[in-house]
Image 1: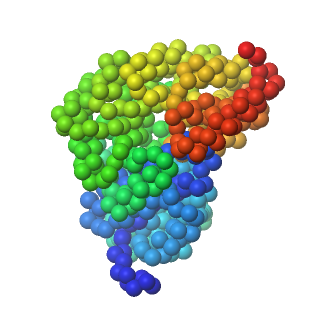
Image 2: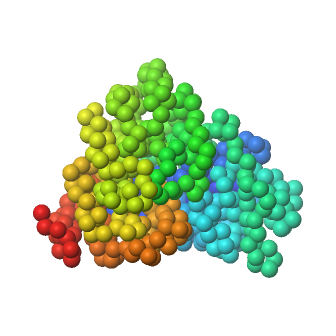
Length: 468
């Protein structure tokens, strides 16, 4: 019983992420406040295989960081599992400290903990999960349970796919990698009814329909110039179309969902899988809306037409850069011409088009940047997700750009140089404004339309900008 007199079921493991909408630096119309699926997926696996009580905590719409301290102090979990990301680093490290103060054994997971394990271990985490999470977390929970939740080095050293700090402050890695779970054995994400309904209600306050994230695959089947597969890399594994559609129908029955958002790295990839997926939706007899991602060089017209008929309302294209020279130099798997062709195909069937572009790439010149701006001007997407990848830029929530600027690419960037920060700032603002159409609430669209002429003028006034 807590201080309010209510009975509280103490979970063995509390799963949380650290994304807070109020701290997101992106403009309101561009945010995609979907909680990451990984905590919910690992929670489902632990509940099923460890035969225990789990709880998920959604930070997306919380007003301040203290809400997590209240939750972890009230629930008193034996283990706190935290999803980390480069953009939520400050919040996540504070969550580690809060969970530790509440007496929980703390496990950090996700891309940022993989890249910076020492940071999280010094912030209060007892162990870092280095892989996808399911089996490493299961082994950790069972081992901790048997050891009265004492995270001793002897216990942690026997868990494949983890790292920790010994008593001398030295970073230690366990022997062996985590065992991947066959995708057909993974349970569906753990979706607490109350938490999910609250999240959907908050979506409505943003002026958009209620949306849920869903995933059909793990990994990415395509090699690009920059790889963001810090968590889900190889091998590429995909669920059956029937299973994915079955989950969509189940969620429609359980929750007032207006739209599904597929968070696959690349959704539109295999024409045979897409055809079976569309068949399964048609056979269900249900109306459904969803949005997904596509790779410009792997987009066929027949698949796009089928997707449009069964409810696909938006496709995000990985456009990268408008410069053929730059993309070739960075070993990209396609050229800007593929983006133009794909955009025409998507638009021809009435699907909204979104673009994901990068600025600040190693070796990018003003001419290269101009070509990216020109590509966006010509394509005129409904939305632009623009990412600065120079060393001083913040990363986006869905992408792990830290690896881009901290690995071998960073060495090349130092040698090749990057454009001045003021140039990139103005370019990002201009690209954001170009993607305003059809995006966000009425108020946010009005704000962006007022800013757009100023941003265009700022870009034109930059040194070296070619006049048109």
